[in-house]
Length: 420
Image 1 (tube, helix red, strand yellow):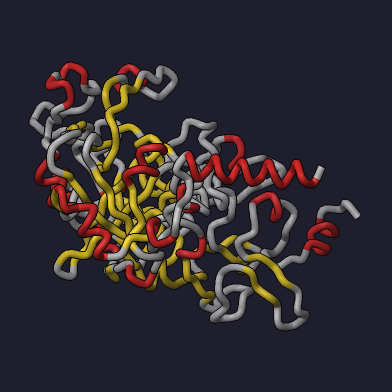
Image 2 (cartoon, helix red, strand yellow):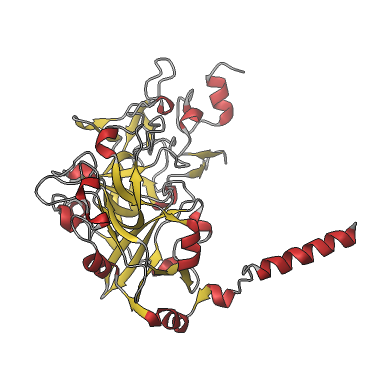
């Protein structure tokens, strides 16, 4: 029996080698010399140069604008959706960039953002890929080389991305009759595996973040065309905090509601969009949820997916005099600057702009001492100095249903619920 097993393994190994799966590290991770060899048949474009060279306002797909989404234009020559196909033959069209996203937190689904530094400044581009758990192959900090021939440059809600043409016939979407048509689709996984090549090994320290105030993030919100060059920018916002508000449609910034088990209000599992968690459910409609951060002068939204692993975690808060108070945890937020100009958003306001984090590790917030938590305590897993008990200040909403204090232990919560 053992002999049969060993023979089977040997045959399998031989088969994998014969099928071309004998991957050697020196072939998987290119050196700069390897990059020169691969790209000798063409040109490496800077990311913005690729957009300037191949992306048009109307798009070129099938040369028939009647096939575009019906809301692709505002009638004044500005398109939110477009597809421009890249030549499949001829000289090689290459780009290179360092991955600035990961999907471990569940907030980036089948998508990557890459960054290139040109003359000290960021250039960024979104990649739409049909690959789950993409960070296993393309982790944050990994530089990649992409042969773009046969792909497309498209805009989805005005956000440029490397993609393939895809015809959307989803009749279940909101305003479905306005959405049917050609739009950016995900690059098939086999194409990614063949045409995305790793350069060196991952190094997050080489990603560049621009430390800027919120006012600079939202300064050019009305420039629809210019916004395309800012999308995907990595930023760091200092001295900011969550103010417990969300953007309520047609009403603007509105206070979130803390969960009340008696009335059921603030329940994030029943599409209660005002719940004070990062991303209440949308009942699988799938649009991102947003919560405000502020520096006291300006505010910008932090965008999260309802499928993020931290979606139902409370926003940073404390109990002060038995009341839920936001803004006691202040510090730094890092993320990817972007916008979402959907629903014919040709006259965008600041609510279209947001910061998207990969996961909660992108939040570096500390107690200011006005609440129950000692000043300087980092928002996260915390050990109380008086008794050594460990609590999670980011606790999921279900865990706090019966809590009279955010610092209650599990035993204290059980006692408070009368379930002993």
